[in-house]
Length: 114
Length: 112
Image (cartoon, rainbow over the protein chains, first blue to last red):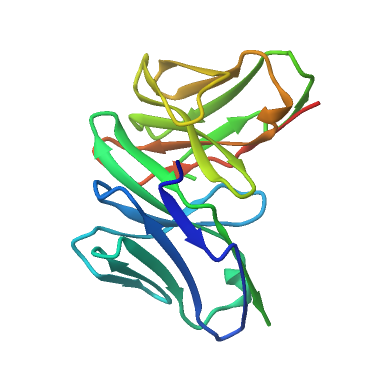
């Protein structure tokens, strides 16, 4: 059962444009929502994360918007640059006695054209 | 990369052979995880460890076993490799009482 759905699968944006990637989750027990960035041949790297008691978090050009009632969250990349071209994964987690287990979305391949 | 190394980085093996992948961390993180990454599926949790000798199954654990005899090493074993286990395998770690997971560089495994 896929508990985190991500869209779109791929996205092409012009340099300077806004990239938007959306995710929806099912389990209301999730309490941590990170985004990971992955370049080819590398492991995923934590980009930005949000807790459900906050509706928006901004770090530089990257913003997470969170809608708890709709069980949706999105990543906005402002002023997209060719160096942002990568695969982006949303995830959701809940913390328990055995640590934090992440459930990932399917991934979005972002291409930023110069 | 939070001091995480994986070995080997690439491996080709034949169907039916056992394979062991190693994850080594230098950060003394308590929690360690094994994921597999396949197109269209994101990353899926295979097994995880919450301490030395303490492990549990993830969502795709069939055909895999793990062991953790010391804090810094987490081994993933494919008991009898199948072509469906061709994938990229990532190890991740988390410090105690934290949510953030830090990933290693991955191992590309091909089962022929």
